[in-house]
Structures are given as structure tokens and as C-alpha cells.
Image (cartoon, rainbow, N blue to C red):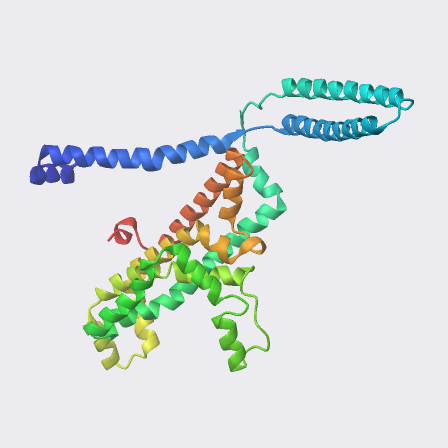
Length: 360
């Protein structure tokens, strides 16, 4: 309350009111209401067993109708070419087929009249479906561990880069390296992913280099499996790991590093006892951002993984846009959100940082 009064004293009542309204609209309209709506959808279970049974019966009747109509057309062609003595039998057959067609059409109409949309019932059945479907459960677990692996790979790769940029590289070189990191991200994510598609292809740069150096005897199929997705995703979100770590290491007093060296501390102890504890908020933020973005990615696994390396977001997409079941899709999406929130809490607990330290 005191901070609000101080803000109003500095910027006036109008600006304060505008900020409160804008923050309220953002919080309620963009965060709270969409999540509540998703939860409400996820708890509404639609029993479509009767609908499915009627759909199958209607489909069977339409197939029979097409077969009967084809038979009628064949009889009609035979009747046109038949002699006078054979015409009565063909006419009777055509009349019988006409009666069958009319009966099938009546059956289809009766089935369509029985077709009633299922009424939603509040239940946890949509969540239970994930744990009873072995394929979806396996893809869900694979997405979690692969996302954690992407986060770990990005951390291992980005920590030395961030330290070098913050404490080792001279000003001009640091600026050039920073620019070299940023420029590729001026290109659309889809185009960058397609570039990795060509790099990781069977005849791509990686395979040509490895076979040329004799590291491997024959090309590796990076695509259509988890390896290509993990490599592409680590590159895609590398900046979200570099910059938070760089920002925190940059605030570290260089005199502490020099004092540790003067006292004879090896480089690994300097990092373990000085740099990493100081960079904990940046590491936590980088891990959180990388994990959440990788877990919710759709384009990268769709392009680099294909049908052989499905990501959980692809399953969610299929429920919404192909399966037509927004309720199950909402349940799957909310479970993924819960995992991301638990990961945030785990990172805060692991690095022993609070929200105020993360927000700096």
C-alpha cells in the first residue's frame, strides 16, 4: 500500500489508475480467465460412446447405400442392352434395388434423428484418459525428460559462454560475440528450424563432417527421432539461457575472482564457491525459461521429429484441431502447465532463490 501511495505521489492519480487498470486487465483477461476456462473445459467429460456407435452404424449404412446404387446402375446399363425377353427380370431387379435404397435412406434418417450430442458431466475422466492411454502416457513422460535434457544441455553450453562474455572477453570482442549470438535470432524460428533440418539430414553437414573425419562409418539418421529434436530445441532456446546467466555474472565484482586466484584457488573452486552461488538467480531463470519454452514447443518437434518422435504438444494440438475433443485437449494442456509450475518451484528450491531475486 505504501508503494502504491508513493507511485501516486510521483506520477499522479491518473497514471496510477491507468497502471492499476492495465495490470488488472492483463492479470484477469490474459492469465486468470483463460486458465480458469481451460480448467473448466478439462473437467467436463463428454461420453461419446453412443455417438460413436451411431456414427459407425450410419457409416455402414452409407457404404451399403453406395454398393446398392452401384448395383442399380449396373442393372440399368444391362437393361438398356438387354433383349425384350430379358427385360422383365431386370426391371424387377431394378425395382427391388430401388426399394432397398429407399429402405436404407429411411434407416439413415432414423439414425440421424437419434443422434444427440452428449451432455457434459463434471469428472476427472479426461485426466484419467492420459494415464490409461499407454501411448500418450509414454509421450508425456518422454517430453518431460527430453525437455529436462534440453535444459541441462543449454545450461552446460551457455554457462561458459556467459562467463566468458561477462568476465573474460574485452569490450569490443564481447560486443562482437554478443552480436554473433543475436543475429541468427533475427530470422524466424520456423526458418531456423528448417535450416537445422538440412544440417541434420542424412546427407547434411553433420553427417558429411563425421563420415569425412572417420568418426562414423555411415550417416546417422538424426531426424525422425529424439536426437534431432533435442539438438534443434537446445539451439532454438539458447539465448534464454545465456542472457539471464550473463546478467547475473556481469554484476559479480571481479576483485573477488582475483582475490581467489591470489589465494591459490583452482579455477573449478572459484566457479563452485564464488561464480555459481552469485549466478544462482540467473541460472534459475534460464532453466525455467528454457524448460517452459521447450515443453510448450510445437514447431521444432513437428519439423525435426516427424511422426517417429512425437512431442506432447503435438498430441494436444491433435485433440484440439483434429480429434475435435477440446475437453481432453484442455486436460492435457493443464497437466503440462502443472509440470511447468512444479519445475519452477523445484528450481527455486534447488537454487534457494525467491521470486524477488528471480525478478531482478
